Structure formats: structure tokens, C-alpha cells
Length: 200
Figure 1 (cartoon, rainbow, N blue to C red):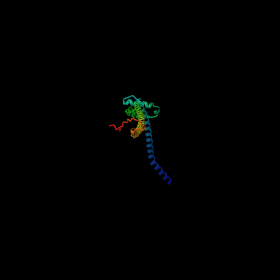
Figure 2 (figure 1 turned 90 degrees about the vertical axis):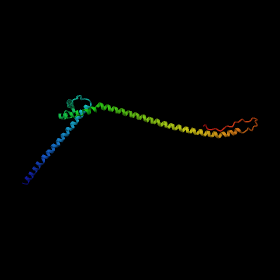
Figure 3 (figure 1 turned 180 degrees about the horizontal axis):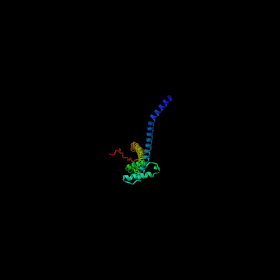
């Protein structure tokens, strides 16, 4: 009797929990399938968008554009196992982003990259010339300092030489005014030198 009661309780518990577990498993499977489908849609959309950026699609109307994209996705070897609904959704998404693909097409992106590369090369050349100019400026500054130092030394030597000359002139003048002691009858014709005046 106790075994029957226990089995009955176990059956009631299983009858209560199994439907709930079945619903949870169904929700998990649906979520897993939804995630898988979204991943497939994203892959298909990336391929269609890359082809659109390359200028592969030419149709302008919405219906023809979606149809053209679906044909491209069906013929793609990596997407042949996907369902038509997924390909259709990816084609519609690619058609909606058609203007974006034209704006950021491969040709436009390559042109922008070339422009930026040229600008970068110009900046590098300008920096190189600027460094060369700085080196030349440093050399000229050092050269100017050397010349100024040499001029200062030459000016100092000239001043010292002038002072020594002014010291020697009075002695020479005194020696020239002194008469000779050898009994010569000729008078010394010495003209006194006037002191030098600075130029006004």
C-alpha cells in the first residue's frame, strides 16, 4: 500500500513537472533556432552589402533590386544551405542599406584612403623639411655666436693695441724733443704731435 501511494505521488509529480519542462525545452529550442537564423541572416547580409559596395547590383527599383540580391545570394556557394526566407530577409536588408553602400562604396573608400595617404606623406615631408630648417637655424645661430666671439676678441685686441700705442707716443715724443749729444750743429726739426681727438 505504501509503495502504491509513493508511485502515485511520483506520477503526479511527473505529470506536473513534465509539461513545464517541455515548454522550457521548446522555448530554448526556439531561441537557439532564432539565434542561428539571425547569424545566417547577418552573414548573408554582409555578403550582399559587400557586393553592393563593389557596384555589383545595378537595378534601381525596389522589387528588381531585392530580386537581384536574392539571385546573387542563392548562387553564392556559402549560402546554398540557407532557407529562402532568410535569403529574402537579407536581400531586403541589403536593399534598404543601398544608399549607405553607395556612399561608402569601395571606390569612394579607396579614394579617401589615397587622399589621406597623400596628406600623410605631405605631412611627413613637411616635418622632414622643418627638421632640416631647424638644423640649419642651429648651425647659423652657432656660427653667429662664433663670429660675435671672434669680433669681441678682435675688438679687445684692437683696444689693447691702441692703449699700448697711446702709452708709447708720449715716450717717443719725449725722445724726439731731446737734443743729440754728438755735437751736431743741426737743430732737430721735431713737430709736436697734437693729441688725438675722437671723431664727432
